[in-house]
Length: 453
Image (cartoon, rainbow, N blue to C red; front, side):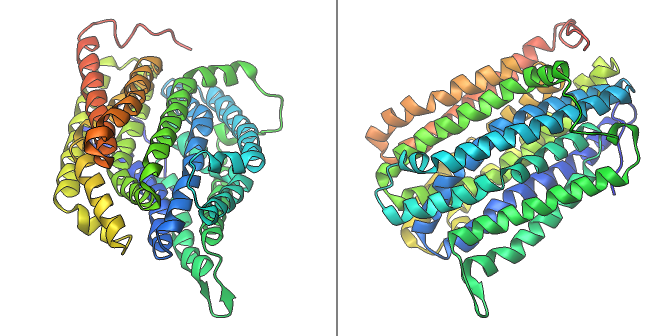
């Protein structure tokens, strides 16, 4: 099941695509978890969608925590593999898994203790929606270890150059989620459906199975770097190293999510229909940024391995190929969202008001898709070099501008002003990151000035 790919030799485009396709598959699978939930929860109405959408902000915030071991491990694992130092690879994998367990326990406990004030922040004005959101939040909080484990294992395997194994395992998890969702949400035979609770249980169950499958593969492969023991004394120097690498991405993810929460609070002024429409619309839009995320992860791994092998000219060629592919994906997504937004919304919901608001959301966000794909891909390229602070600072600052832009534009454009604040900030991030890369990459010192670890 899957094997390591050496990205430091051979044809660039073919190897990048070979690595990126399974990564994109994993991204689609992870997005599909939410999409499947949306399809089935959407049949229960906008109130249930609003509840899951509200709780979803906090499961999204979980990414900021598991980003530390996932990103740090994927970079250092890729670089150590490029250096053929498999002992170092083993130590980084062990440290990443130790970080995962500790962070998952901490964040899960926070959700269990503070779920009520977290949900009340959005001022939904409907106690039944609040209760459904809290139920969903408590359930996923109890299974947070498994929410963390899958992405971190995926990052480790990808750093090794094996993106096929995570794709297969995550696909199995998706199939389980697809089977369980309708049964647990609406019931089957004499079993009475559990509604929002059923959706949460289906997702957590799938995540548990994904984690167990990864563990089975690790135990089955008798390789030096998989001979690990997470109960050994932590290597604090490696944990510090991965934290430093992953911290910019984690901070970006956390701030990005918190900004989205504030935007969600603004959207709540237009009621549950607006919240439901944004939740469904963002899941549809996620197809494009998850695709770009696949190429971003691929180019990060590619750059990491070639950086470890001192193949700097090869890095330049790989980044050029990847950004052109990502831009093509963005153009396709733009055409899809702008031309048939209503059709896409009707796949998930049947309520006319929600479809109309979602149609406007997709139409406006469609214009930023190419630039968003540029942004995500460039972040991956910088990350592969271990240069994570510059792109993440840019992303944080321009994303934060959404809040004042949303307040200002909504005064004249109503809810559409909020959508335009999101779209315009994505355009700015894509253009700025691409411009900075083009300027810096012309300097001979750009690819070889970083200190070897």
